[in-house]
Image (cartoon, rainbow, N blue to C red; front, side, top):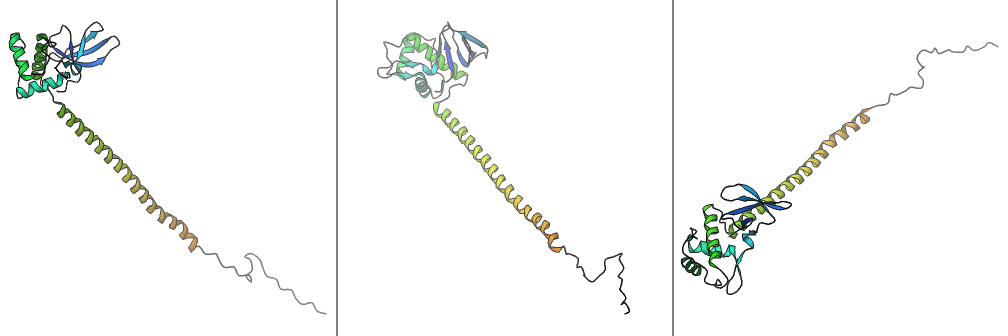
Length: 206
């Protein structure tokens, strides 16, 4: 089970969700009431994902123990933690035969069963596999969205530049056209300049 950000506070019968870390306290939210409060430095706060149960071999994380309870009850509730101690020990041994009978007390078993049923009733029991699948899908969507955005930007830049080049060619041609058509007026050398009279000199008689 995924128990991230779920906390237990000593002396409290319910569970809490981690909200933020304050200067001298932890801000938490009551999972049952939604009420927020601050747990001071003197409060004993435990993260469920860091709790493990003693076994005859390696310690087992609480999330794995809850997986076993889920499988035994096919996703249903487990025994009430208010039943007699012997009934709870027998039930826990059926689910988790490898637990250390000498180091795991009845009070520990009660906490595990109570926490399981509390989370079950709040629909907060989520398997690790489901969380990983959701994270994988989310990551895939983000990567896909990023690729499409880059592709769109590159396509727009290339298309815009090519289009600009095509439009620039007719403009260059238009500038050169008047220079070709412009003709220089022909000037006849034997034509008198306007406003002037041609005077012929008479031959002098000898």
